Image (cartoon, rainbow, N blue to C red; front, side, top):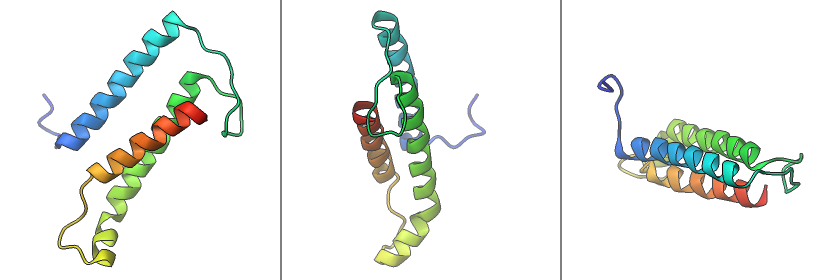
Length: 102
């Protein structure tokens, strides 16, 4: 079914994490409805807003890393491009930061 797409383990884990977050947020919202809150983001947001913003930022971090991986390898004198696990970890840390403090 998914043979047309190259599913590397980091890509699969990234999308599994997104699906689990969406399911978890749905259950959390049903059990405890959210209210607006002001954090470091320039507007008042709900949990769902912060999740959406965090997922967008995570996607941009991963896309930026994919686009710059060759340049990073060249500048640091690496023999191969750095692992995508680095961008995955950074994007998840940023997502948690936005969810908690945003």
